[in-house]
Amino acid sequence: MTAPHSVTIDPSTPIRVGVVGLGRAGRYHLERLTLRDDFRVVAVCDTDPSALRDCREFDATAHADWQSFLSDADVEAVLIATPPAEHARQAIDVLRSGRHALVETPLCLRIADANDMLAAAVRSGQCLSVLHTHRWDDDFRTARAMIDEGQLGRVLSAKWNVWQFARPARAIESNQRSAWDWQSDPAAGGGVLWTFGSQYFDQLLQLVGAEPASVFARWLEESDRPNRDDSFLAVVTFANGVVGEIEVHHGSFAPLRTGWVVNGTDGGYSNFTHFSATPEGELVDISDPPLPTAPDEFYTAIVRHLRRGDRNPVTGEQARRVVALIEATRQSAETGCLQEVAR
Image (cartoon, rainbow, N blue to C red; front, side):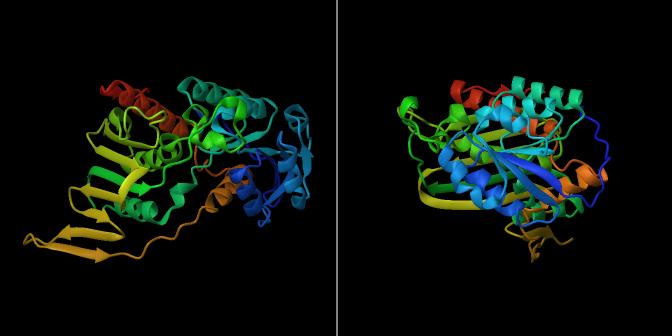
């Protein structure tokens, strides 16, 4: 259950945010947040001295120690942009300290950790929200609008494919690993199942609007490769009978990117186009202007949640469902068996 959140601060007061993890994601959020009037970056934290030096331009208190950062009285909310393997521990610490936790994707790497994070949010009464900013992608928003408006009827199936030749660099021995190498290491939250799966499984769950029941998955790379988490195919069956399919192939010489393709009882969607049939059975396709991509809308929605009491844009419970689906997908791909998705 989501923790209750009461608004006691002047709605016009900027949210005083601290950012932990100053790699690519953390740096991106710093740059975006400092352009806004409704946020004020008051602190940053990283164990890498060079990362702290590179962020001196942001005029925020720099912390090299986690406990020192947590003790910073100016911090009201913490944006966690560290490697995903650190998310659970850090978010729980943040919530226990009486701050709001805004967590980069994925929420965490295990269902058990997700449960602990949700429990910590309930006990603290603070906000736990996850930066599934791809909910504001133009293709997804357009597909969802058609579904919500009833243009497709009842959704029957949805799929999203991307093939590209973009094999990531292999993770090296842990004692030689640089700060960037975690992104190729599935145990740390890297690899395409976490990076692509976190975003597109979330979109699939939003499009279908039902609980996932089971998943059947396959790795698409050679079995003798040291890390097969470059490519996967997952077929998800939902409790309402809808079937969803997501395929990512980073070792493909032939390029393919479908965006969302949705089939319903009364119509279909693909590439910003609405497909339907006339009473005579003739296929009609009408192009719709795409709803714009607007990833910064997550920040706006968080401000409305924390300052006005509007709904949390991405709850911990929603992000937990993504973790459960990825966990089941990995188990299915490893065993070759249909896997139930944890509730």
